[in-house]
Image (cartoon, rainbow, N blue to C red; front, top):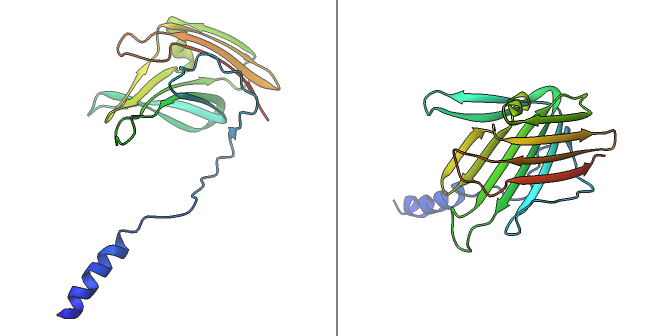
Length: 178
């Protein structure tokens, strides 16, 4: 019986150990941002851009929750993902906030301009995550201008969400691709 009293706490202490070290997930299609001209990122947070080549952005529907959500799958297009992140107050568990704008471009696009309802052609999606809340909405009010060259991608986006408050309303990015 004494052995059980000794082994039980030892078993509990070792069974709950979390993984330590660095975990990496290789993603060969993510192009690194080497030279960025960042305009439009709010000063109280950080912004990042991912350009994923040979991918496609699919908009999935959850009929139970009556929501939509993105899924990035293998494809023949380019998916652009812009993320604004703001850390919560020190000592809070759920105080972080983020906004993500995703859209898909045909791989051979050189110059593209889409406005308002035309943003559906590029599957433009706005997502925000805050205190235990994650929601996505299609963007239907705004203007996107894209210039795609051999060396990089530049885009400007001005948009407004009627269904939910937002922090980011203007994005101007120039990305040199390696």
